[in-house]
Image (cartoon, rainbow, N blue to C red; front, side, top):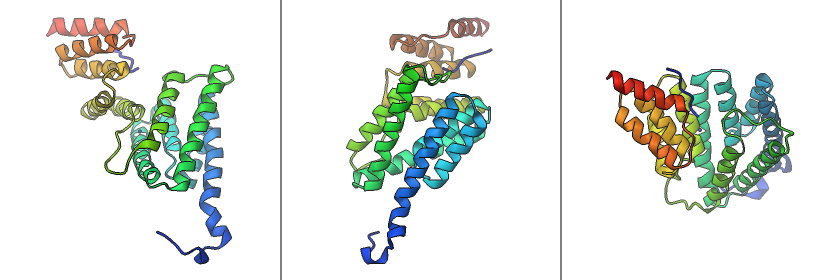
Length: 247
């Protein structure tokens, strides 16, 4: 069956001017590499994109979009275990950054603002035709990422923030491609828990349920996806009907 599945206070006198500037300089340099990674990702120059995202993550390990970009590269080049690791790193970076932002960490706030700006620039270039859209996602996925990063500003520090749906969907798809159905289902359900009207998550859950022999659940997920306005692949419906008939 072929299915299309549409991550200490320090006295000022103890810091030299260079040491005080290093974190900010690393951030500025990391953002340059991030933008180059985004550009080459859209041009499907996987090796270059991977190199740039790795450079960004090495300079600033808490830059969630660098880890997410690496995950996209690894998915495109079918290195699914590496994609899982990248999306997990993205999720951890997002959670850590939300906590820092809640504590009004200035560098964390700068990191957030600069990533939002980079994503908005990426969206503008796609919409103007100057960047090729990715096969999956495109402007809609970018809108989700921008919205979630903006919302991170308003999270208080009393609990763990919800994992954004785009991270859960990406992580679920990496698990799915790696054959880890239970892990994929967990991530897709995490996305639905955050946004019950997310048709893409329901669609992907339908595929997992069908492949694991839960045909009634798969049918219910297809209906939920369509109710949310998601266009379900007609082949998935045919495959589900055939599988249920053979049961």
